[in-house]
Length: 466
Image (cartoon, rainbow, N blue to C red; front, side, top):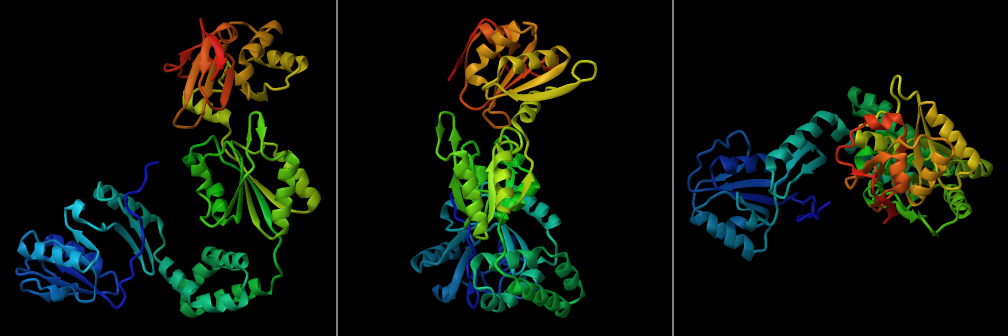
């Protein structure tokens, strides 16, 4: 993700002026934006060719004067003549933020595409690079956003003083506002009128203020394979509600950042050969945070119930009497199948799919894998990159056919995905550096039906680990 060249802010213009220098269609477009605010909008131009009559702006059909900028909060220049140049210099001299139409290098700020649900506003900006794209994005947001959301925001604003008196604790106050703003009863009441909405809102506030400090909760959330757009909608919603985000090493920073800005973040990273927290310490941490009344997002790579040790954390939470829920995520094997269009189950070829971990697999487990694979079951082997050749050799020695198709996906579901394909024999004897990152090894006849056209061949190479 690249760095922003502009910092998005909301600029105060109440009781101030917005001055537009120019009288053509470009000036009119800026005026239409400016009148959405409570500022006094003044248009100055020697020749006013556009129709400003319906906008309620102040028109000054004359040459620009420096005094026109008195009390101005923002200045737009849409005049390419001497008046425009004079206005640009005057704004610079008076240190008033300036926007020069179609001259981004001269602009202190850009006008975004705006979704107006006053007092709620959403601005979509492209730093001036793609204004048409910004407008298209705004249109999508407009379609999804309730027209009544501004009324809801005003209701929350009227309640603020009362809330601060009754709910002095930050977390409880935030929980009330989240309940208010997501309540279907409040939404229905707003349709009936402000009085009904006020009654519903104050009743909800009374309920929250009379409650004792609520116990916390732990949400065990699957972060998916790593791309933030593969996170579930439920996971996104709970990350926004969490007071603390406890996350693993493999969860990308972009996913962690989808939580609230003010949420506490705790890295309990477990990387190969290095555990900053033991599992017992993680269990104790989750219990302690929940007992403090906090809502905890326990963010795990992939799905928490597949090699995520969620079972141990759930057992600890149950023993401590702490509430919890599980939010599934896309596990790496499914992301690997999607990356390569590999059908893990396929009629007459693969009747099932089994996931397993290569670490600590004994002879009994290996024999079981062989039996499954020979009965047309696809295997998904996790955490097997560093022992891949040894696993292949053992599987062949236990009776799995050496020509069984094999596919390896490193960094499944992420932009830097790398794939390898071949056979079990090629995995055993090949000579390839497996790129850095977590790997999934898919074994079975169905693997050959995937799209491995861009995969690095395992045959005739030696398997090594970067």
